[in-house]
Length: 313
Image 1 (spheres, rainbow, N blue to C red):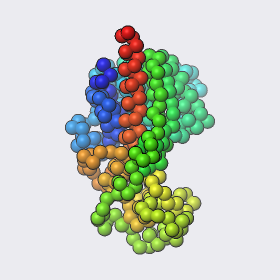
Image 2 (cartoon, helix red, strand yellow; image 1 turned 45 degrees about the horizontal axis):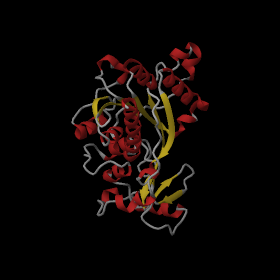
Image 3 (cartoon, rainbow, N blue to C red; image 1 turned 180 degrees about the horizontal axis):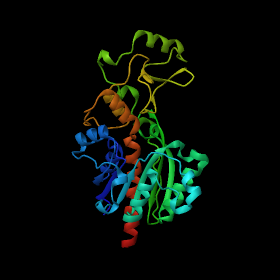
Image 4 (cartoon, rainbow, N blue to C red; image 1 turned 90 degrees about the vertical axis):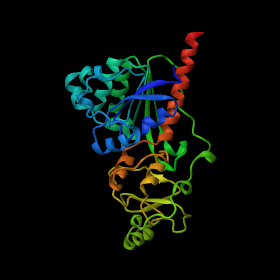
């Protein structure tokens, strides 16, 4: 069964998690996303317009599926929890929507993605509640922070991946890929970039003055931290949805192009760009590093196939 399986794509964004699971044989049977611009990009690339707000969708209306996928926003639970006790701890949060669909549909597996800080959020309560609620639905839960840099894209992006299985499968998170197989910055940068991506001289000079290492080899991507110091790296810092336009610069000269931002997240060359620069930046910042998801998806299907084969023996 696990050579071909069905999944649903919740909080779908522009389909980064979907791409990772399609790569290992999955077929998407339902998607949901509330942001209309993200839906536009999603539709251009997958030929379907995601259903809207998940809070308004009845779990019974969702087609049957094998794996639930969701990169859900991180929110605190504690205030509600204290008043109402365990069953209502997650009420009113977006995690609750995942929980309610898992409760009704009971798929064999799920994958959730979130910011690294989830484990520290609200002194660890948020993550504890999530894990307890998933285990209360009889899932075996695994969680690990993975860095996109280790899986082949030039971006330091640490995210927690939470996976769960109804059966006690033998699952392991993927190992980092060998250094020589990872894409370098020079491999993803475009040649002959339009002048519109270049920053004004004043910005460039100000950045170069504050650059920590003036002789840093090009190409590099620098980012400006809160204190205003400029640090160069041979990779991008995590793309962020809300960051200022000049948050990251290539060689302190220009902003990354739309295609470069998609490459930094590991999206394929065939991926279509149908919205403005600012919207692509926001969508890439909210998305996932596709190779990380693909690597986890592969390990999940290996574990599920192995379990199924043992049953059949």
